Amino acid sequence: MELSSRQETILLTIIKTYLDTGEPVGSRTISKYTDLNLSSATIRNEMADLEEMGYIMQPHTSAGRIPSDKGYRFYVDHLMADKEREVDEMKEILIEKADKMEQVLKQIAKSLSVNTNYAAMISAPRYHQNKLKFIQLSRMGDDQIVAVIVVEGNIIKNEIIDVEQHLDDETLLKLNILLNTHLNGLSIEEISLGTIQKMKEQAGIHSEVISDVIDAVGEAIKADEDLEIYTSGANNIFKYPELSDNERASELITAFEEKKQLSDIVYETLSNQDGGGNIQVYIGEESPVQNMKDCSVVTATYELEEGMQGTIGIIGPKRMDYDKVVKTLKSLTNQLDSIYKKKDGKRKNRNKEVLEE
Image (cartoon, rainbow, N blue to C red):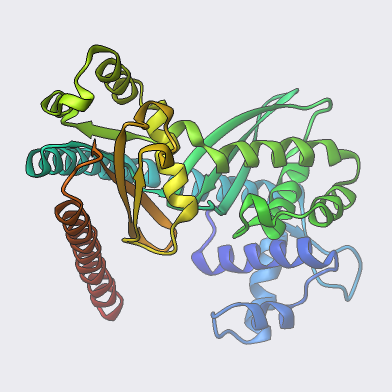
């Protein structure tokens, strides 16, 4: 028999409350934790139906109810379906956003190089100090589980973890609750040894799983390999005699092609800036990139939302037009900020209209 939405709400509340407290759950407790506005008598009737269907049971007379295996199965399937749907929706949105963002960033780099006659670079926005949004552990086989880790910016990472013993649905459920209760909203720097130790103690014989998941979270939050950098105008270097001899030009072109050294500029800029739009100027030996010691590098940090930042850079000769470059970068970061806030405001207004409907 299919459960009504009211029965689903009551069943899920019983299971969640029992997982938190370990105590049988009564009708009064249900009425406190739901917005159903039902009397205790009505809730008791629904609980009796749920018991008859095998989703809950009464450990002894006059006690509340606890979940049965069938109830746990319903909860796990419900939880997994919700998380999988959420992850799928995130992936669709991210693919669409990533395609549009890539086009915009490439156009920005091209415009900068054309307008300044120097080389230009821009990194894709990424979260500075990523924080964990949620973790979902699922069984792959008797000796493996997969950890789906979602961090700020809806970055999704899947990590396969080997386990020494079979983990049943109830154990996985309790580990999911344990991990999300303690870790959600934390950056890797905020996950203390005390927190890890407390989680391992609560996990008991499955403490090793907690250690493996923490390692996977650390890798997902760092995600340095995902940094995208778009460049344009590298050939403008040849317009300046002091940079155009074969050796210097070759080193600079290589830096733009491989982009690894450009990542150093991005990390240096993000670590030294105080806020969105902050301008930094590296002259000659001040440059964080060895191959650019004969150049000047001017960078700015743009911010699309709190913590989501990227770097814009102009690379040219030491005799570059600093006034023009600084004004251009300031104007661009202000425009990006304005465009984002405008779109964000429209999105919030749409959400408000939907809620009012």
